[in-house]
Amino acid sequence: MNTPGSPLALSDLISRHSTRLTDADTRLLDVLIQDPIRAALENGKDVSFRAGVHPASAVRLARRLGFKGYPEFRSFLQSSLTEGGNDFESPAARMAARLVKAESDGLLASVLDSEISALQQTRNSVSDADIRAFSERLRDCRKIFVFGRGHFASLCSLITLRLNRSGYEAVDLGSQVHQLPELLSTLSSGDVVWLLAFRRAPPLLHEVRGVAARCGATTLAITDVGGTRIDPVPDHQILVSRGEPGESQSLVVPMTIANAIILDLASIDEGRSIKALNEFRSFRASSGLTMS
Image 1 (cartoon, rainbow, N blue to C red):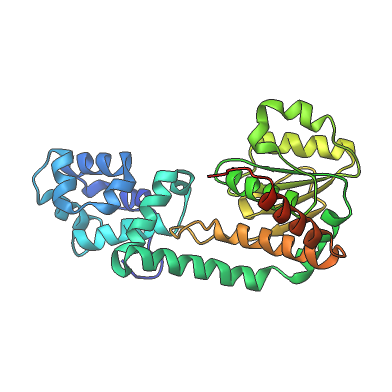
Image 2: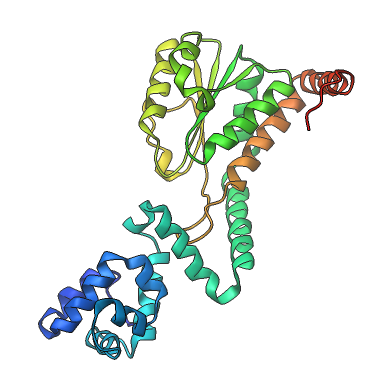
């Protein structure tokens, strides 16, 4: 099947060979289509068992579809999964794709290779000027509102913590969604709204962006291609990849960028961050508070 013009989807194969398919083939295909993630991980015997057909039926189906045997057909299914497509809208599919890719090299090595690759792409796509555009706006603002949903809620919390310790008043909107109207009612033109959105920007993020636009606040955003459709367009936006389909979708990449921005902020704020960090350290040491 590695010939020019080979179809890239199972539906293409079914259409091409539909006149040759038997009742057993149809039952097998029903099983494959209903759960493509599981199909890409199972052998032909297991798929046949779930379809209630003879164990050899999966091999016959693979050959009717143009493959030498079921292992080659399974490799096709795995490639289709790891190369992306609509299946990647499902978190389970993305995890299954990563497991498929990890089979040959080992799980930890696969995750590490994916993270390294994503970080290298970031090195090539994000410049110091991009970082400086963020840090200058943060330095000169009155207050910083940080917002992200899903996995990025934890990163927003970390960004907010670091900014506050560095002497900047920052608010984690994602952790206080129930108080969003009260928090955003204080937003002014001297403030910054820092957004994080990957795969797609959730509706609530668009609403927060809309409020920021009406107030005249500066909006900064870190996104990937799927999160770029923010309307109105942010004042400054860093676009990164967290990994190819089928790879570990890195949280290290956006965290690394956020760390670089906060570090650059300390380099241009005339000692404000360093002073605040020293004062916080002294307070924590003398406060008598037990944090364990």
